[in-house]
Length: 186
Picture: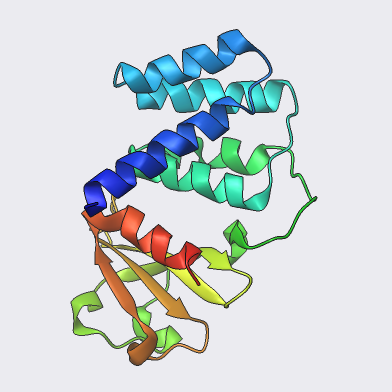
């Protein structure tokens, strides 16, 4: 099975699992219909509105999966605050989680021990962490002339907190799922 079909199967499973969180069969059907009709952005909106409105708790891994899904569909900036506002379900084992915003500030890769020349002139934004293996998945952005980060990440990187280039995995922007899958498979 190729990586595209693996991603499609994962995303299909994820949408089914997320639909199962919704408070009514109608909400779940509307959410799934958004994906089927190519309106994933609307589906994310429905999902987050219902989770928040009904105070449905989600665990850290689900929160991270929703954030990655939002990133995949170009909605992370618009949905991040709503994702972090969802009620936290603290039952179960913590594994993958979003880093708190105060730990997600952009840094020069060299300041965290990463010297990969592909990342020269870019900024690393730590994003998700695995609590089992202490690896971090980060978005890599260019800085715009006016000082903001580029809207879309140029790369994703995965490294151990005891950073060294030997531990670094770099993924081009279209390979977000491969980067996340690698983080999940520690």
